Length: 287
Image (tube, rainbow, N blue to C red):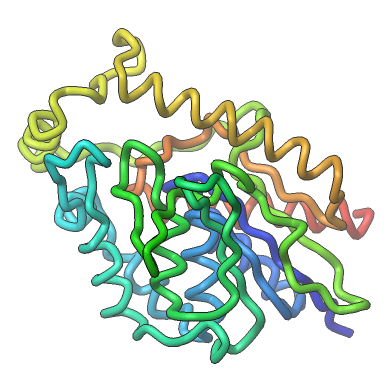
């Protein structure tokens, strides 16, 4: 008999591609996802899954390389963020047309933060991509999303792993995925950067004022300092949320496995999520 699960997907930037691998592994083992809640990248993957058209995202991931990532990065000179985010949402709409959240195949919610009043916003109705755009607005990176006169930033600021927001039926088990876990990273073969992309990388560095160090050993600049600070915040809040709302299955992926902007490593990250889920399921089943 299939196990029904309420699925919770954490924030984490590019690391959130692991959620795709998680979903694939869960379905392969006969788990049936009855609802999903997500923050930031978790809201994007969860929302697209809830449309019932996940295969279109998988096809996109197969074509995703560094050049495609750069094409989707619409830099801005605004002091509200480095990236507008319009190209990303437009690409997602091209893959999977927009619709109302209330019309999705399963219950879904996305978490964002109202940056003016400091309140958590739980999107359970309205346009799907409005909710996703609000939820993925990483502070200092993406411009805040303006919806109905409110300015929203990443939901991870207040609730990076929304276990307390997922719609759960009586016999559902809760499966939560934390891609920001403070555990040692697995040793995996990394996706190399091809020489043909070096020119584009140099251009990207120029556009953002060389805020991103080329090597991990470089001095910590403003951008890396902000990223590391956000990661620490996400992990601390996630740990408290998990302690207060223990899931039946917790799938942990190391915060240090990938960077939050390693989108060109999508296929590799998906595989990591799949592998972590296999391990968690075996533990749950006592194998």
